[in-house]
Every structure is written in C-alpha cells, then in structure tokens.
Image (cartoon, rainbow, N blue to C red; front, side, top):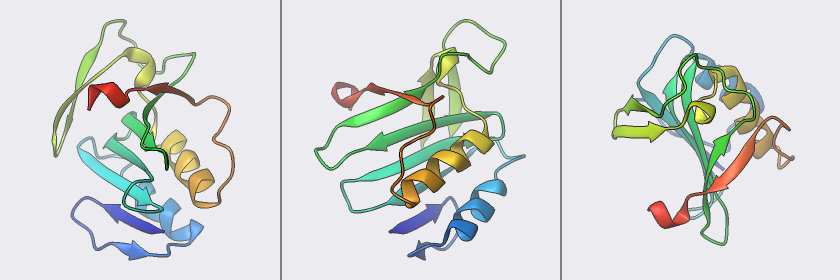
Length: 128
C-alpha cells in the first residue's frame, strides 16, 4: 500500500495511525486530495476537505466508483462544483462526505474490511 496526500511525501506501507493522522489534517482544509493505492489500478481517493469531500474507489477490474449516501450532509439540493487542486468536480448533494467519513473509508480499505454501511457506490467508469 501507498498513501499520498496533496503537497506531502508519500508513505509506503502506512499504518492505520498514519492514515488517520494525515487525513485528520484536512479537517479545516477545503481544497486537497489524498489516495491510498493497492496497485496502479486499485485505489481509494478523496478530494476536498472538511465537510465537503468527494470519495472515489477503483477496483482491480478497472471499475471506477463514486461514493454517495442516503442522507445528504449538505444543505443544498442541486449539484454543486467542488474545487480541487486538479480542477472542479460536479457533485450531487448526496455525494458529499465529511472528512471523518472519509477517514473511516480509508481505514477500512487499508485493513481490507467492508466499507461503512452509510457509504454506497455508483459506477462512474463511463464518465472517465
């Protein structure tokens, strides 16, 4: 595994403590990204920060997924652009996650466990 975060040195074989700490640093930041890679093809990644995070996952078969949840955490009802270092991402209201939710998703991925139940995945492979 390899953990990478915007403007930081990559961490090979990160521990759960390292992943939690690095992502917790994005609590008050709104424009960052991080990824945890099993291989060049398989990863989990986030963009944003604080209460406005996008969460995506790509599996070994090359399918790319965007996370969403049943109950939205943002007050708006229309899609909105999330500004990231790589550009703008258009997100539906239920595609926003808090950094705390992102941390739990990254940790479960690191530990090869099932994602939290509040996270569901939409196949967006054809969008790329």
